[in-house]
Length: 413
Image (tube, rainbow, N blue to C red; front, side):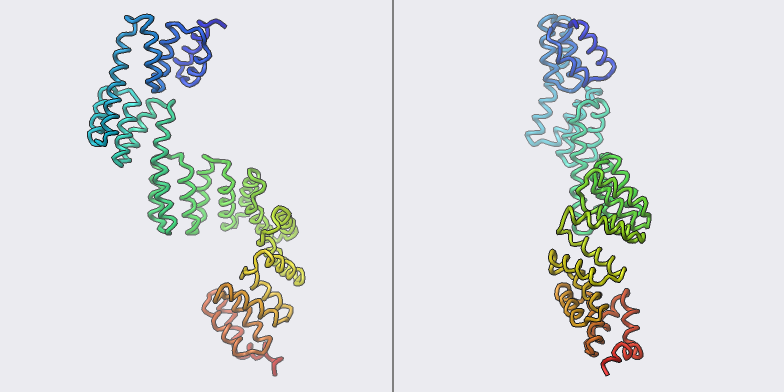
């Protein structure tokens, strides 16, 4: 392929506004003549690489000074003006740099780098609104230079960090304002979108959370953690088939991510598909023998099937991993109470309460154990404390009714 033909191809790409491709093909040309240098100047200038543009234009000027003199003079003036504005800014005279950059924009209305310099001066002055306006103007004039997009993203991410600080102290309204501002600056900021989703998830607005998460997922479709969160939203909304779809998508990206596997097991259990739940939980254990939640759910399944000894086995496996897990200790207390092994029931209830004081489920089982052991005062005390909890109030009150209490302690007479 001749040099002239290659230059013709580069020109075609340049005039078709495929500037990056034009530059890439330009670099393959070895025979550099006047037309090459001038075309290189045009391409580098279009990319706002003024040093590269100037270098190539100087080569063209050496070959044909008269032809390119005016363009050389204009480029030199632009470079000099930009240097002066930058010197003012780096010297700490931010307000003056803004005024100088405004004049640059007036003088070079269609030059992206001038708007960029004005935007940068505004950014240094912490006037982010005007900084974004000018960075966006630079981006619209020159979409080929990633620097302008990067600076927009930088400011957007600053708002994300501010929002995260508010989120961490549970000031969700202020956090939401910062995340919204981040999206206003950069509508493609998936981190801001996911953070907004987290806020709605925390306040249990699962419809809104799922909507925001899914919008973010369109920008970052390989985010397996967000797929899992979307699935959990749909579980909360009892949309189990949709939830399973997102859990499976999460696992398709990261097959070793345990959380969606466990969420699937819970969905199967809630749907009454205990066999599939058990298979899933055993697969989790194969991947991670120390995942105690799997044993805990297996324990619940065996309790529901009245396989109490199997439930105890799973409970003990979980305790080997997490000896102070108060939820597992409470569950074991419940199983032993069902087996009428009240000494063991009391032992595990007290162990649970030792880890989490006034844990109502453990107090309730302690009350059952004490009734079984004929410790009536202790039983009444534990069950009375349970009345403070809305979930346990009715059951505790029923046990405390004199006729019922007498019935459950009739073996003590």
